[in-house]
Image 1: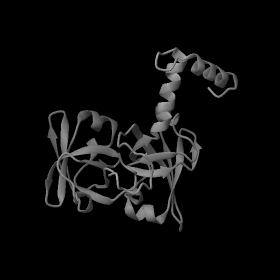
Image 2: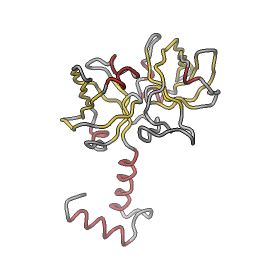
Image 3: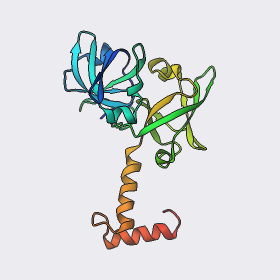
Image 4: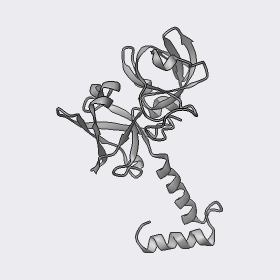
Length: 221
């Protein structure tokens, strides 16, 4: 579990094929403090397991599934990436619950810069868009953010100078692909409603059915 508050910007040192997946070696400093092999590190929003640590770098194995869903499979040496270690029980919780389970890719459509920050418009497919709400939480390339507005086929975000200086946001360009993780609460709600609609045993009590019927009558479902 992560917060979406980036701890450090790392740099890809090397990539190498390994069966259907790949090894990714990343230069870092702060996130390696107290980190051991087997620990989790969030790389541009994707939770990865550390397989080796060598001085000021760590190596992770990117599976073919992860590579197909995220942008990690496209990384090349020199690329800068957002890094965050997994939370501990004593961690301050300043972002939102980020699992590091990327739901899919988004696309940067527009970037508007001004003296106060950066406004970004991004697009996603309908399979992700249905979970996104105005003022809701979302993680983009591992950064915990608040959705400013919903737009056709996507959403807008606003970045303050503090976020810009501590993440790779300033390096985004129009057309770039980004990793998107929607708020897990929305997915749980959808799953519960699916069971209730289909009369599934996990959600088909008379009380729940009556509640769902009322929601449908009022146009909420």
